[in-house]
Length: 553
Image 1 (cartoon, rainbow, N blue to C red):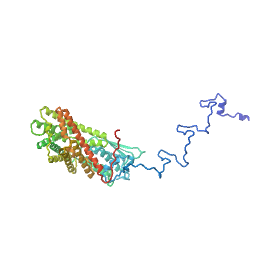
Image 2 (image 1 turned 45 degrees about the vertical axis):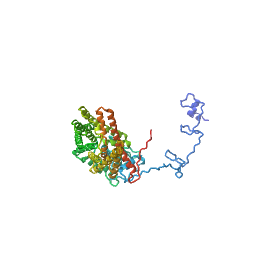
Image 3 (image 1 turned 120 degrees about the vertical axis):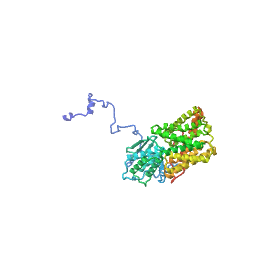
């Protein structure tokens, strides 16, 4: 070997092996045998296959599987028999001839992925309107419906119908007592668009409510081709329209309603006039308080005082009249039957937050009425007025007079609700039928008043839903006024009178009876509506899907 080769620099490994001064913390200690990279891979993990376990390798042309790929043993031609329930798989058919309420309720209760896609192409514009404008129109329509007393489920169905009419099928409306919100997500990879609106004012105007329903019906019709600008124009006209009845007509209707209610509980002509005057005076006081900006609680409190004061004044004057009938008639004009029915309906359909808020509102109104009547009854007792609850318990059986009074009560109630003139006759007849059913069961059949009230309210709900389906409108104008003769005015008055006379136990029993009658009315109306949807199949065999819940837990 030449001298030049001897002077060639040696490798680091050789130098470290022969030179003890050269070392590092990564150097391999002497005497430790380490396998070479060619024998076994150095990298491993907890997911590595243990030594000695043979795993079948995929074929050369087979791609790597995933969680969404079918297993290797699956064959489409030799697939196992799928399980079919005994009743068959429910098929959801959404025929256009059905009312939009039923179609939209069915789709709202379906998962988003199972909803049928809307028809291809927008209605009026070539590229379709902007999503924020459609959501704004939807919220404005939902605001008018919720402020008018419509149930939360119907409001959501209307909002979904408006969005779907413009091609926004992946939307989710949400309705509470004071807040409306809607979210639209074009696809799973795009950001959702969300908008909300607060309902700050509520008003009773069923004429406007019917106009909103017609607008939603036109938007849901694929042959109408209603543009977004036209929908906004019609919505602005609804807001600008004045109420169909002037103020003096509403005041007169309030008085006639109280007079008709006094006849139902055994009053005569003098009682009719006294109750009418008390209710009209209370209505004017409530309007005065509303103009001053007082909350509705104080409006109900003030409106309940004049009928009670007139009844006590007649008793102190030793006039031979049933003062309890006068006070009961005045209470009929104040009981919040509309809010009660809407609250129970929301609870039965699963909107518990909205139902709790509505029922809390009803409780506040009821407490206001109780406070106003109790103040006057306490004053009357202190002045020596002999108010005997048994004086009005013996209701005279006058079926023709009572049926006529119930129809007058329903008619005036419809006027107070600002209903369209075309619906007044139908709701008047519905109220007469309701009282006929109640009177036949209660007085002729001697059945419990709670059961009689529930059945009569069920008839009201059934007929109201039929009329609403016939006209493709809301059922509220055909049901709310018709339950007026069934409201628990006399039970409420007797409970308050007993409390004023320091008979707390008897008063609480009567108040509990009034609450039971009110719940019977609300549940009966809702049950009648659901029965019409279950068994009266209009145009197809479609059935709504209801929420499946466990029992007991």
